[in-house]
Length: 154
Image 1 (tube, rainbow, N blue to C red):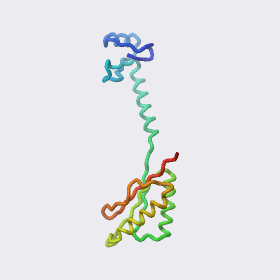
Image 2 (image 1 turned 120 degrees about the vertical axis):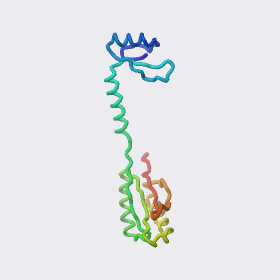
Image 3 (image 1 turned 90 degrees about the horizontal axis):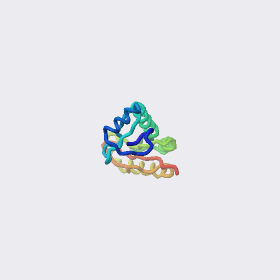
Image 4 (image 1 turned 90 degrees about the vertical axis):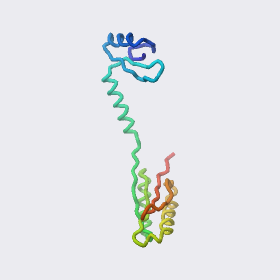
C-alpha cells in the first residue's frame, strides 16, 4: 500500500488497509492488481479519476497529427505544370505533411504506365533533400501511387 498520507510502502491485509483508508476518510484504490502483492493507494477516488483524465488528455494533445496532401499528375504532364506541382509539394513537406503523388490514367492512357512511373521517380528525386520515399510507385487500378514523407529535422 502506498499513498500521500502513508510514509513508506507497507504490506497490509485488505481489511486493515480498508480500515486505515476509512479513518483518513479517503478511498482505497487498486493501482496494479497483477503485482504480487497487489499495489493499492489511499487517495480521493474522484481526484484520482480527474488526474487520470488530465494525463490522457495531455498525451492526446502531444500526439503528432499526420496530414496527407495529394498531388495528381497525368501521364503526359508538361514541364510547367510539373514545376508548379513540385513547388506545392515542397511547401506541403516544409509544413510537415506527407505527400501522396499519383498519376491518373484515363481510358487508353493506361498504355503509358512507364511514363507515369518515370514521372513519379523524377518527382521523388527532385524532392530528395526535403523528403524520403515511404512507398515506391505502384499501380493500383487506374492510379499509380507514391507516398513521400518529410525528412525528420535533426
